[in-house]
Length: 142
Image (cartoon, rainbow, N blue to C red; front, side, top):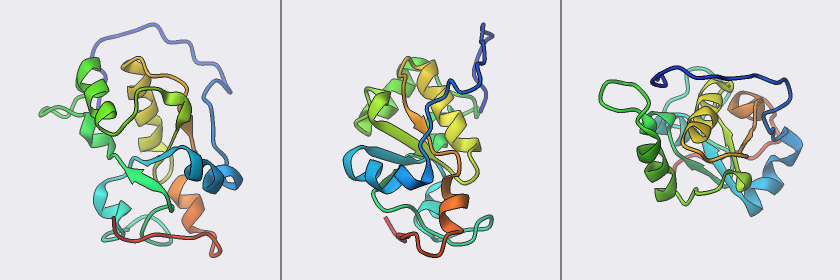
């Protein structure tokens, strides 16, 4: 999806809060871990890209597509805030987001900031990293 309009953005390396793989399980026990992939990948019904199907224990599924309007562009900030608040997200500081390789999680975080909700972390390794480690627990289904 595309963000409407143009803006002034200054990118600073290291400015995006991150969550690292060794901290994911502990984070998910006390905070909100969001899986931004489509639901069929989250539930394990379909997995065409990664080692295994499913999701990280404790994660909730909010596909990044929920922020798109009928034209496939990102909805306005108020609509984005409504979607997030339906999932209990009003403050980003207690949220971490992952996807497969980081594309959808990065877009998810950009959309959160577009809507004025800051501080969420990106688990950049995401499902691709998690599912490649045989000792990591995996959930299939909702």
